[in-house]
Image (cartoon, rainbow, N blue to C red; front, side, top):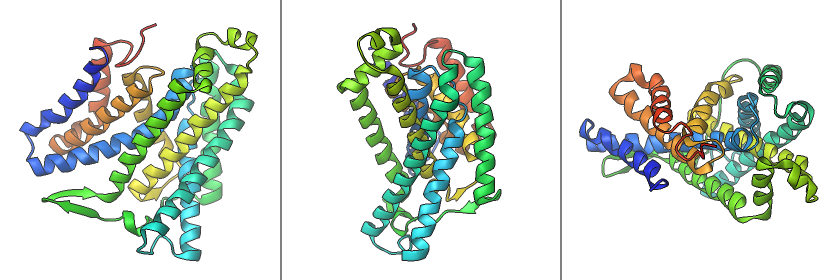
Amino acid sequence: MRRAAPAALVVGLALLPLAAIEPRVYLTLTIAGLAMGMLIFLVAAGLTLIFGLMDVLNFAHGALFSWGAYAGFTVLVLLNERLGWAEAPSLGLNALLLLAAVAAAMAVGLVLGVVLERVIVRPVYGRHMFQILITLGATIVLEELIRIGWGPNDQVLPVPFTFQGSWDLADVIVLRFPVVAIVLGLVVYGAIALVLRRTRVGLIVRAGVENGEMIQVLGHDIHRYFTGVFAAGSALAGLGGLMWAIFSQSVRPAMGGEQLIFAFIVVIIGGLGSVSGSLLGALIVGLSYNYVAFLLPKAAIGVNMALMVVILLLRPAGLFGSGK
């Protein structure tokens, strides 16, 4: 029952607006909300690993989001200019182009994550105030480097031809790229859950969070594992940045900071350290934002904060939090 209640909440939230919205519009908004939720989950998944499992307040997560977006943007532009893959009406070439951009975004996020963890985060483990200050400083530096390298203005991102446009299914408009985002989000969720629950590495990481000294005594270098977790979370931030950039068809230096608040809301709603909670929390945020934006546009920005407050009043540890 404890595990079924949060899922029932998402289903109830998705069905509630049906009474006030025309069915065809409702289905369009629901698909858009699921896609938005999955895009937010891609960002929040990395934050769940870093904040939820490692207890590190990494405010540079948004900057890693931006760097991943710009790395993928660069690959898309270069390959399109030289080979024309984005404009080619070929699913194979378009998919290959997207995979190349995803690889670049995740690689850049991973490298930056390793550098940040070893240089500025490792010395301040367990000291939240220092973590906030030092990662905020890293955010400023990383965003300024983006402005130096790519310029301060918004830039249009080329979307592969196959992923443009929409399908019209019985008068229900289904955009193509959001479907890709939903599938990718489910794949990422499955991969994270598998690693954390079914592998030796996941067991060591979870045990290290509870008692790092015992893991060290057993002969495991917990710092190396934590570096790997931080790098994985940073790579997911880069992936989320690229997918959001394709969804919005543009990149800008401060785009990560704008999405970081959504990611923190999702992690808090879902419960610290729970990947399943982050997934459900992201779906709640995405669906509620789209429904309210259609019914009461002025209330769309505040609805997620209100939901977070209500959920924490009912379940202070979050949907899947342990409460410890």
